[in-house]
Amino acid sequence: MPSLPLNIVAVLLPFASIFLKPKTWSKALILLTGALLCRGGRTVCGALRILGMKGEERFDKYHRVLSRDKWDPLSGAKILLNMLVGDSTEPIVIAIDEHIERRGGNKIKARGCYRDAVRSSKKFIVRCFGLKWMTVMVVKKVSWMNRQLALPFLTVLAPSEDADKKSGKMHKTSIDWAIQIMKQLRKWLPLKTIIFTADGGFAAANLAWACLKYKVTLVTRLRLDARLFDFPEVKIGAGRPAKKGRRLLTPKKMFEVPDIQWSTCTVKWYEGGTKLVEYITTTCLWHVTGYEPVPIRLVLLRDPEVKYLPVALMSTDAALTTVMIIEAFVSRWNQEVTHREVREHLGVETQRQWSDLAIARTTPVLFALYSLVVLIADNLHCLKPLEAQVTAWYAKKDITFSDALKEVRRLLWKNQYFKSSENQPDPQEILSEDIVASLIDQLAEVV
Image (tube, rainbow, N blue to C red; front, side, top):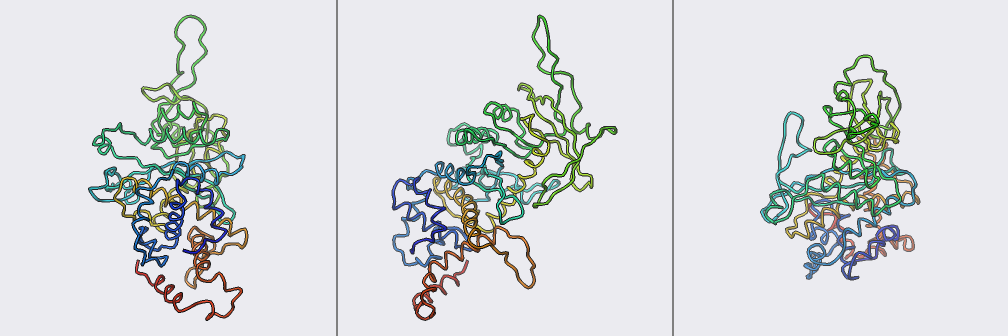
């Protein structure tokens, strides 16, 4: 295997410290390079084939990188997070969501039966067997794309309830995992301002109180029938003070009040655009049975053009501006785009490991590969601006992740076969018959 280009080495070198042995690190680089160049299933054998290593008799040692060798994925997630955050002093928006990886097989212990969000609709629910992952991503803007990107750095396997019962472990819900992940983020970024944004499924009182305790702002969608209360009056004298004041209207009924004065503002919207929206905001207490009332800032949001349904948003930080709350929640849409692109371009759901450890490692690595491609493309963009792939039948203006991946692949192929072309202009001196045969064989590989 030839040495990697310096632009790629600069991004990957910090991860060498998470491997116990240098040999494991070198094998991991080979698998990572093969995963970048593959166009089909991201299997170990597929990565070796695309690199022209079909004659490797000790192919089993590359399987052991995922199933047996010692390295620390959690430390790798911390390194990747610091690379994505950098020295920015702006609030860091962290998006968290569930991702269902469709997988079958009796040997996969952690699998369960879940709602398939990709194939389901409001009226028709599709359920599938697979693995549930908690994906955590940094939402940030890069210079060569017109919208924000959701860049994965931590992906955690959440076993099903049946799997935990069989293994004798206490089951953790998605909220339990979110609380644990939030605590880990605060430990990694003790001085940063963190905005933790999620969909309405994570609007839970225990998560909100945990975020308040660790000084992390939770921004999420609130149920339209949520029980809201005013703050209690200050009680003077004997008796226990009240925990909440008078009952307020539910968000659904607030939307129906005819004489409310709505404010307007322009916010960053989906697909990198901007939009004029109407809102009303207030501070109140959100009460869930079994928990103390949570102080929140409530934002009721509606579209003047009536293209989007009205939503109720909440923030555990009452000092957060309305625009920041709306934009933080809208930005989590980029996470859905990342879920699609890792399946489409990086082969998530095509891996075929059966070992518990290999399963727990492979999908997080493929998600992290998305962020690594963006970081490498960012370095390449500084040297030469990235270009969108254009054809006679597709007038594409904006650069996408597929363009970034193409540039990284082009750099890898050029480094492997054409790195001496500048000094040797004669193609016959550059490409021997063996190299030409190997190149044609790899590009013609059936996927």
